Length: 353
Image (tube, rainbow, N blue to C red):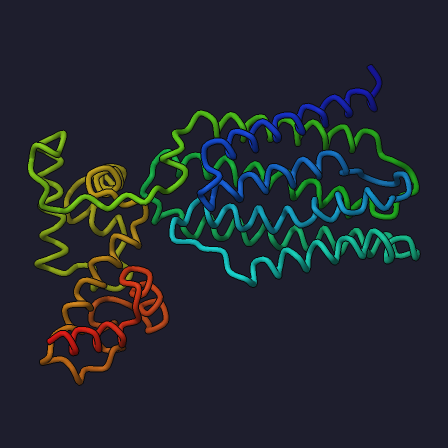
């Protein structure tokens, strides 16, 4: 089998697996934001598998350019996908769509006008440097939110998905930049590119399929109340730890401390971090440690805002007393939880009284 035929088989395998993954996500998680972004990411990567080429290739046709543009925009989808997959509170904003549109449009203009005008090297280098920027953003987001993730199996899957995707994206970008403007098609580089892509797609598909969807995708389930009866708790030992944890939150208000972490609470409870993660996740129903802390902070803030004796206390003072570092994050978290701003909440309570 020739190098070209082997490369074609690898591309076909990657596209097939990506379509299977997209179909599976559509069947089970089409109504979940992270699932929708997985579908978009899979289809964009399929476009990349079809169009990716290192070095010189045939002239870009009108039908080929949109596929290349969608392939380029897939790096923005990858960034958004990593955010949605590992941050249950993430929501798409209008400017996310604007960024994707700008990247896709720039890539299309590159294909149709900039590269054909004799600026091939500059066009390819610019697009791939842009890809590297979004890869770095995705990796930074993943690392930054790592410690707050309470879903153990999701923590393991995130390492593989992001590391593998970033590895391939980085390798492809470097090869593209290295051979930008080359007058020959580099067959070995295209074969390597197709082989690595097929292997990574197979690994990601396998990882996504074998992990329980409830671990990967958030479902609108209310957290278990802290004082649930022992019959609702599988192990008495866990119930004792839940009680000890809630005493730390209610009596000592440890959530007020600066930079409180899973490690801080685990040390106080004298248990390993992994056990505390499992406890908060499986017994209390939280998927993110920051959400767990903020819910306690917001409950304190709600009580203060509803207290007539504190009617003149500034909102920012109440926010910082509860453990928030600034007003912006407090306002966003408060409205996400209650549906109203802190000021509106205070007025509602004053009117009701």
